[in-house]
Image 1: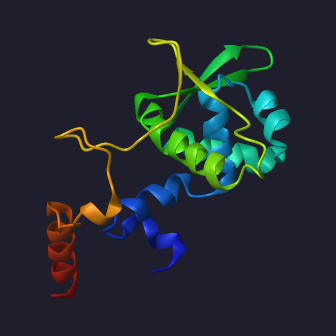
Image 2 (image 1 turned 180 degrees about the vertical axis):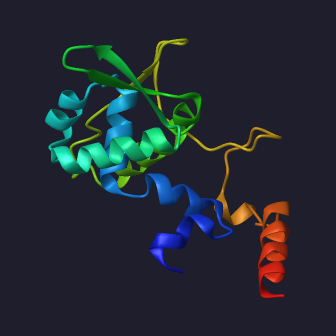
Length: 161
């Protein structure tokens, strides 16, 4: 599998990585969830070159993870706001943060804590079964082929014949 074709591979992780699979994109998303909307603020917080930041923002807009809207006319300047599709990446970032807090804190504790506004408690993210609500243990999950793999296989067969 070549990186340039990873979005075509019949794997949901590979397809997602084709869009959000680099450190800069994840940091842009992190900052978006913390309220950053403007180019200069992203650049200041992340320290990314203008060219690379433009590239990453454009990709997120192209894939409808961020929406680009003008907030000033002369000169034209834009804000980047999370779409519904972008908001659905929140559990991914929170899970990465939890892992980083546990394994990468250098013994100092988490650099950021999260307060759930509904119950007013500090919280962390757990992955739970959508059916029974139990916390997921990877040893208790059996991956099975889904309909997307069958469709992919049929497309490949059709191309070969």
